[in-house]
Length: 157
Length: 253
Image 1 (tube, rainbow over the protein chains, first blue to last red):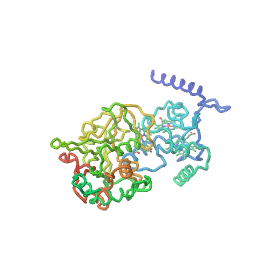
Image 2 (cartoon, rainbow over the protein chains, first blue to last red):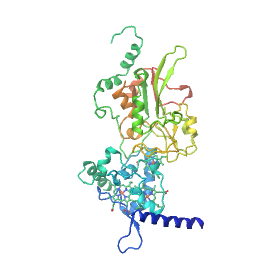
Image 3 (tube, chains in turn red, cyan):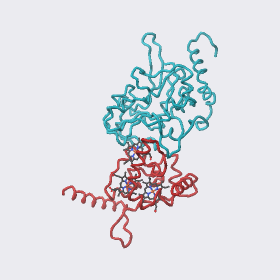
Image 4 (cartoon, each protein chain N blue to C red):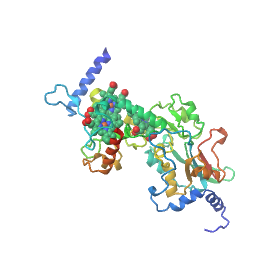
């Protein structure tokens, strides 16, 4: 019981803190604030159906993790490095924010739902400098991005 | 250079003659950018295929071509994998280091790079209680850091002191080389590069900026650079008496 109510309190606190940070935008007319993950400017679609990704991204990531580490399978579709690169969110300085920043894509929902992942204790939470231009750019003319989008489109066929 | 009585020259030349492959690399190397040569090994596998035991990755290091004081392989590894000295040598990362070998009788000194020897029968794998320490089908010995609980048995089991524990938190990791506090790590033969058909960063740097002392490749393929170089002359395994069959071999040790 104690655990449950503590969780409630924590959740409520998180929602308040989140709202204070402007993370949770209540749409006009909606009563419940929901997290609003930033949509990457550079791509139209995720690596799989958006609804599927919302529900199953953790399963896909863990599956990919085992296949990559133990079997050397290095497909791009569910690679964590790939998520981080396409979903990079620019901070005030124009550079992609790290996981320590509440604006990081992988934190928007997690903070809201009180999920804590340890992935970024080891994994880089933003693309490497050299790849930065490609991922943080607003233009869709970037060749690297077009290549990535083309690749994603191909994966979906 | 003359042949004069300098007995250091003779073994050098012999080694060069023996490994024609190394010679080709060294002569092309000066002034050529990294990407222009040697970044591929034959037969990169498709990204969606698992590695198999058809290959066994190995490395031959010719100590005669390893100049004293040179640490190009070490700095290349550190840059590639994002580790650096924390200022506490006793807990520093041990992906690769230069060791000095001294013959106590003659006082003769040699230097050699030492790293995970990627044993065929790795003791670190035997002792791991969680299965985090494992050998990939293609012979690369790794830590699955997702499973590692940081107990460090593998560090004690390794006769080469090739593993180290991450003591500090990090937030500047390389995308290709995740690493974090509380887990054990060691040389991975730059596994993500190898999977992409490239050679390890140390081997590439040694060929481009130093003596081209390192030859990387598939030990199972008689036509690979490393197999040909091994076939061309004697080589040694460190602590061969332990019967671990390391994938890293040394020449002129």
